[in-house]
Length: 63
Image (cartoon, rainbow, N blue to C red; front, side, top):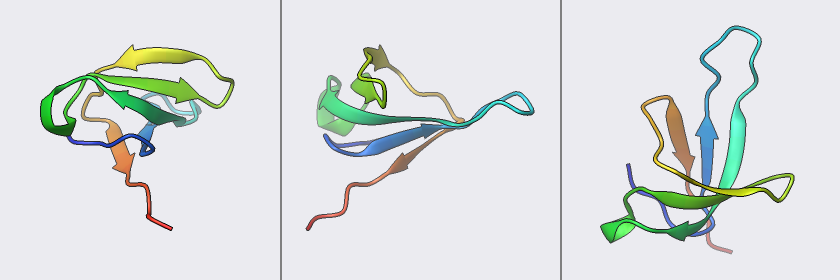
């Protein structure tokens, strides 16, 4: 998995009824765009994640 600053990670819920979690990549800590990533949730909380196979990358679109 590769991501860039500004991309969004969509972590799909693995339990019925649990919503997807969407976070923004604020820093790529691994080499060449690979995990781990520092991410920011909508509520402003930041954490470091190494996404699993249930995560999709939404690439930032240039303006």
